[in-house]
Length: 394
Ligand SMILES: [Zn+2]
Ligand SMILES: [Zn+2]
Image 1: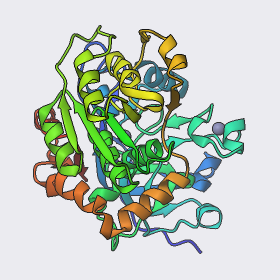
Image 2 (image 1 turned 180 degrees about the vertical axis):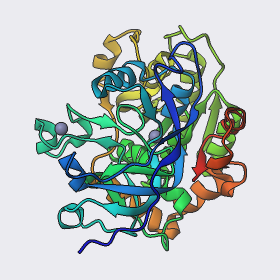
Image 3 (image 1 turned 30 degrees about the horizontal axis):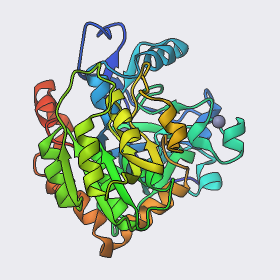
Image 4 (image 1 turned 30 degrees about the vertical axis):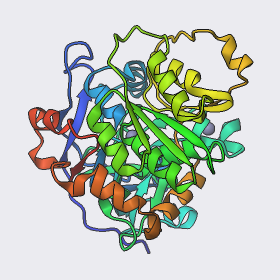
């Protein structure tokens, strides 16, 4: 017999976007609304047999969420998915940790997930049927939805999630606040798994949260010199605290610039005995930053492209990619669940200091970076966005 917890019925609070009531072009921010409590209803939806209800404990705010706040990313994906659902309301958010409070009838049999377990999970809900899913490349599933973008997310007291996306966490080994950001940490782990980093000189362009995680991981994976690059000097202060050997502040240019920053290239060459870095991580997502990554990589080097932005980019001197024999790697999401396994082992290992630095340096031990969901106001939230990484406590 399944044991499900007594959970509330009726309505719950959620942070949302409504394509009709708010309008993409006429609004910004997230809107607190009452939404129906999610239910497991296998009679009406057979997929509920393999879904769970999570009581969300903490939710992470991602660059994606900031982009949605400013209505700069995922306009099409959000509207197309809402049209397909025949609705207008999207519950936002995709980084979470929580407790399973209700499980469909096949959840335990098929996934080993039980009520009362603490879980985080991958934000990409893959189809399981396409070619990529079949060969274990779910991160490039051709028929996937993303929590909080193309299907309802987790900025709510409770959320319904497919059990196959869940990853059990052990709070005796990982703090709940850090477990809540396993998903973006996994992005960095995935990016750092593309090439062997032992003894490498690396450049990290863009030191937002995932760039910060990348610094910690490059150190852990044995990189010999880490050069952090950002336009924000506060991010670079954090980068140094996390273990970057050098930090280079680049100036803010107008967004249409696509040419590489010559000053940056020269500075990096100076730090690498004229060669350039072995591995350039592009974690910012601008055209200029991509050009910078290509220009600071040494001949024969690797360029990891993670920063994401809609629209067309211009590659100056395209031939350099071939002439320098650069290796380009696009990185999206996480490998499910290889990346999760690696992430967990790194965070559980107290000796590498990674979890401690995420908590003490990036999350500032929760001081100012954790916001009470019930006290949400757009003004307060906007103010909190000055921190690189913030959490909602549900
Ligand atoms: Zn995220
Ligand atoms: Zn698929």
